[in-house]
Amino acid sequence: MEIRHLSTVVYEKDGPVAWITLDYAEKANIQSSDLVFDVDTCLDDADRDYDIKVVVLKANGPGFSAGHVVVGTPGTEMREIDESTARLGSPWKGQWDIYGTPVMKLWDFPKVTIAQVHGYCLGGGTVWGLLTDMTVASEDAYFQFPVLQGMAMPNMETGIEPWLFMNFKRASEYMYTSQELSAQQAKDMGLVNRVVPIERLDDEVAELAFLVAQAPLTTLMAAKANIRRAWDMMGLRTHLQASNDLLTVATAATDVKEYIRAVYQQGLRPREAARINAENAKVLAAESKARRQAG
Image 1 (cartoon, one colour):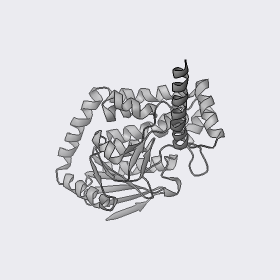
Image 2 (tube, one colour):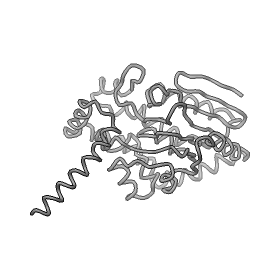
Image 3 (cartoon, one colour):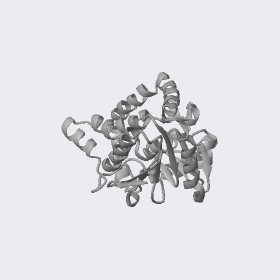
C-alpha cells in the first residue's frame, strides 16, 4: 500500500487500484487551481504505473465537490483565469487551461475510472462525478448545474451534459432550470451505474474496482478506447472544445455581466440564486395566470 499526501488530494495505490481522494473539505472540494492540478498529477502517475488498472475518484467531507471556484479568495484562486484576463483581456485561454485541458485529460485517460460520489456534486464537480467510465453514488448524493440560473453561465468550459444524457429534452431541462437530480433519478436517466447506502459505498466501489482489475491491462485499455472513440467519432471532442468559446462569448455580454453583478451584490452562491429563481417562478406564473384570466 502506497499513500501520498498532496496539498489538496490524498493519493493511494494498492495492487491494481489507485484512489484519488479530494481532500479540500474545508472549501467543499471546490475546483481551485491547486485541486485541479493535484488531481492531474495523480492521473499522470497512475497512467505511467503499469501495475495500476483502475482509478477511483472520491472525496473527503460532507460532499463530493461543489464545482468551480466562484470568488477567488485566498487558497481558492483560479490563477490561470486571472492571468489570462490580465494579459489578454479575456478569460478564454485561462479558463480552458484550468477547466478544459484537465477535463480532456480525464476523458483521454487510458485506464478505467470510477467516481465514488456522496453528498453534493455540483457544477464543475459533475465532470469528475459523471465523466468517468462508471459512477457509484450513495443514496444521499445529488447532482446539479446551478450556474445557468445562478450565475447566467450557459455551460461549463466543457459542456458534457448533452453527451451524458444523450437526450436533448432531459439535458435542456437539467440545464435551463438548474434541476437537482437525486442519486436515484440520475441512475434512472443513465448517469449513474449504482446507488447504494452510504455505509456500503466504500466497499461497493472497491469490489467493483477489483473485479474490473482482474482483466489484463491491455484488454481494459482497448475496451475503453473502443467505447470512448465511438463518442469521439460522434463529435464529443470538438463539441467540448467549442463549449469554452460559447462561454467566453456569453460572459462578455452586457446582460450576463449585469446578472452576475447582481448575484454578487446580494452575496448569493449560484445554488442559492437558482433556488430563489425557482421560488420566484411560482409567483410570476401565478401573477401571469391572474392577468390572463382578468383579461
